[in-house]
Amino acid sequence: MSRNLNNTHHANLVIGGLEEAEKLLRETFPSLKGSPDFSVLKGETFGIDEARELSLSAARKAFGEKKVYVIAPGKITTEAQNALLKTFEDPAPDTYFFLVVKGEELVIPTLRSRMEIRHLAVKPPSGDAKKFLELSTKDRMLFTKKFVDEENNLSDFLDELMLLLRNKTGLEEVYKLRKFADDRSASSRLILEHLSLVL
Image 1 (cartoon, rainbow, N blue to C red):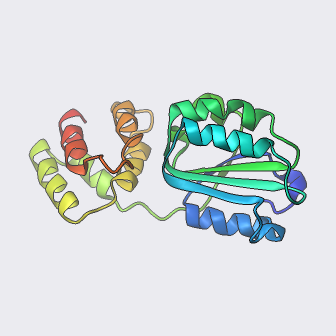
Image 2 (cartoon, rainbow, N blue to C red):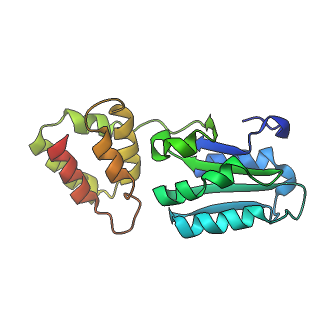
């Protein structure tokens, strides 16, 4: 990611983890360290209310010369993404947005088209998703029990699965489940058992 602000697009889609993105952005905008003009918005879900608050905040004048918003939720709803279209397309001067997600597929095409896509180094895949696809239905159920017992990360697993299924049957089904996998109420067991039967 360029540290020259003249080359930094006002709306950016960052593919990678929040920790790496936040570190890089603080290096890119060193003058904003500890400033109210540098906002990191995270949490389980970024919904329509959060999108409206962001749009109102972004329309206000910066305390300094520029404002930076890092949006890195567990998931961002389709309604929120639609609400951000105008904000990302026509922001206030010297305002920069960085939406951090694990995969481009998690962002609707209309919002994605308004952003410059930047890829960060990501941790190598665990291989669990590949193994899961190669198992029989019965063995997938055993895999599911072990996965849940070990409290493995469901979101990372589904992200890996989506990459493996890109342009293949089953991608849409995994994508639908991935959109709410970060919710507290999401059951890893039910999701994996369902995928065991439909993939």
